[in-house]
Length: 280
Image 1 (tube, helix red, strand yellow):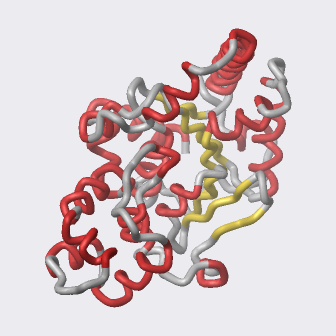
Image 2 (image 1 turned 135 degrees about the horizontal axis):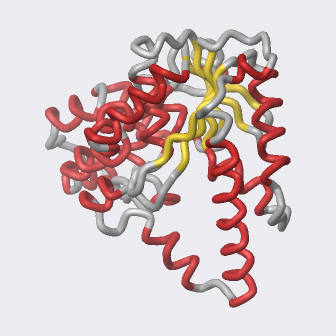
C-alpha cells in the first residue's frame, strides 16, 4: 500500500503534487555510469518534494514506446531503436544494468508513493492526464520534474516544471521571459517544426522564426490548416502547402493534453483515477 508523503512526517500539503518523469531522472545516474542508484534516486525525489512543498509524490514511468503514436507513425522514435542497435557489447551490457536498476528503483518507490506505469504508454501522457484532471483529484498545484521540454505543453497557472540539468523553473508567470509566443501557441510551433528527438518530421524549411511568424499571422494549427493553400512565391510557404496534412498528423502525435486519454487507454485511465483519488 503506497504511503502518502504526509505519513512520513512531512508538513507539506498533500494537495501540492510533484510528478517525476521517472526514466528522465534516472538518466542522471546513467550518465555517471552508476548502476546502484536506487536509494540515491529516492532521496533525490524526497528532496525535490520538500523543496517545492509538495506533500504527494507521483512517479510517471515509461513502459516502452507509445503504442498509440506508433499506430499513427510507425517510425515514431525509430531513430532511438537504431541508436541502441549500434551499441557496442559493453554499451549494451551497461544499458541493461541501468534498466535493471531502474526496475529495482520503481519497485521500491511503488511501496512508498504512487507509481503510474502501463505497457505501451509514455510518462508524457500520464503526466498530461494528471494535469488534465487536476481539479478532480483535488490537486492545488503540480510541479513537473523533467528535463523534457515537451512537458512545457502542460504548463498553466497551476502547473510548473523544473529541470534538474539547468536548474531552471518554467512557470506560467515567467514563460514570456524566455519565449516569443504563448503557452497556448507552443503546440502549433512544435507541430510545424516537428521533433527530431522523437523522429517526428516537421514541415521542411520551417524553423523557429518562420513557425512563430505563421502562428502570429494565422493562428493555431487548425487555423493554418483551414487557411491553406497559401498564395506565395516563398519556398517555405510552398512547402507548407505541400505538407499541410502533416500539421494535423503532428497534432495527434504531439498534443499531449488533447490525446492523452486515448494514448493511455480507458482501462488504464480508470486505474489512474482510482489510484490518485485514494492517494491524494
